[in-house]
Figure 1: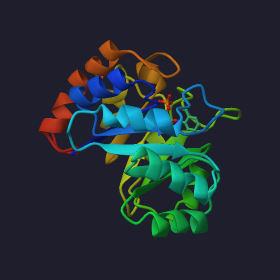
Figure 2: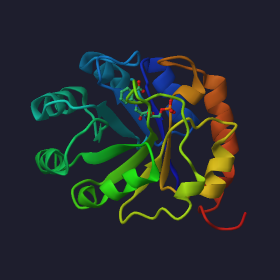
Figure 3: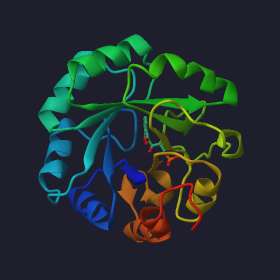
Length: 220
Ligand SMILES: O=C(O)c1ccccc1NCC(=O)[C@H](O)[C@H](O)COP(=O)(O)O
């Protein structure tokens, strides 16, 4: 089944509603420079108020220390980490080895398709990849799309998420071109950074209905 990660959750009531609408993963930005930053205390409170549904709870970090990642995961009750900076394969390996029960996702910001060649060393040391758009000043939440056509044949040896500028209007087109195991959205379903537009989130899941009823890649 297609995984749907909604990233940049900052409010308990929005987290609850987004899970109710169908998200299979929530992302919490643990990067202090981001307008979507949420403290470990706030993440813990948001998680405490979620309905009892199987949802992956992912902390998004960029060039954080291993200690900070571990402390945040344990304190907040996260079940996954997304490494969104320049983390080396060796650092990813350490994170995964230390947090054995926690899903480790490495995000790669794809400037050109040449960046896809850097994936190989990560394949053995993380659980999933996330491909995001490159922006010279912003690490994530940029609203910029990837070149989906260039990713048509992308089949890494581990599960992967498509991110970057996805929204309710373009998700169908994106999924007609690429075949990810999951999708990740943030600014395309927001009123302002960190403030999700629940009507847009509902419209997203409405548009995704066929993908839950039929495995991706099969004729609808
Ligand atoms: O969203 C942020 O503000 C952010 C800041 C620093 C590192 C990562 C960040 N976001 C990571 C995500 O997983 C976003 O969902 C991803 O970049 C896609 O964002 P968008 O293009 O807005 O859908």
